[in-house]
Every structure is written in C-alpha cells, then in structure tokens.
Figure 1 (cartoon, rainbow, N blue to C red):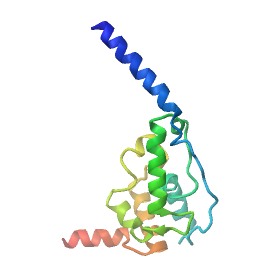
Figure 2: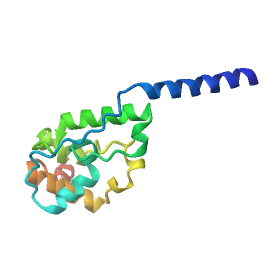
Figure 3: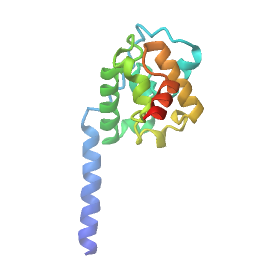
Figure 4: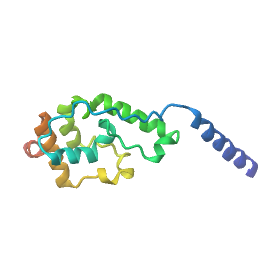
Length: 153
C-alpha cells in the first residue's frame, strides 16, 4: 500500500510539473483602456473597480497563483469570458444594462472569487450603492426598485 501511495504522489508531482509547460493561462495582458464609461460618480467607479474590474476590465490584477497551472487556466478563462461579456475598459459593451441586476441577484461576483479577494466583498450598504450606481450609469433597476418589487410579490 505504501508503494502504491508513493507512486501516486510521484505521478501527481510529475503531472503538475509537466502541465506547467502548457502555454495557456500565462498571457496576462492588460490592453489599454480605450473607452471607459461615464460613471455617475467616482464612488461607483471605485466600488466597480474593487468588485468587478479583475474580470470585467483591462485592469486585471494577476496574483502569483495566476502563473501556476491549472489555476492559471481557470483564471485566464474567467478573465477572457468576463471581458467578452462586459468590459468596462471598452465602453462597457455587452451586458452593461444587466450589471446591476446580476449583482443584485447575487450572481456576481462568483462565490469562488471572494475568498481570495477580500477587497471585493462589499457590505450590504456598499452593494446597494454599487447597484444604484450601475443602474444610474447604464440604466436598469436600482436596489430600491428591487426592494419595492420584492415587497409587492
């Protein structure tokens, strides 16, 4: 049994070393900001930067673990998909109108993002402020409007 465990550990280490040679996930580019939206306030931009910009802008912070496969693959995929869906550095084309709703529904930021990004965890008041700011910047439902709708249901 010990021999089997030793072989498993050795094989796992070899695989982890070999996958470091796969080039995907290390193309950490942050293209220049071309057309940032006209934010309704600097506070909305600050909250969006804290919570959303790592995946939804060209201002991604690339921590050390984004250079280690397989984590680099996952982070690169998330950033590529996030920028494709909504990129605040490219005029917020895409799903900008839905940004407040997605945040209010708890769909963003994803649960797996928050443990490694403590600054992205917003208080209840900050979340309401960001939802209202995104709605004011891009259109959509405010936090107060969502509360009113929930009370009517």
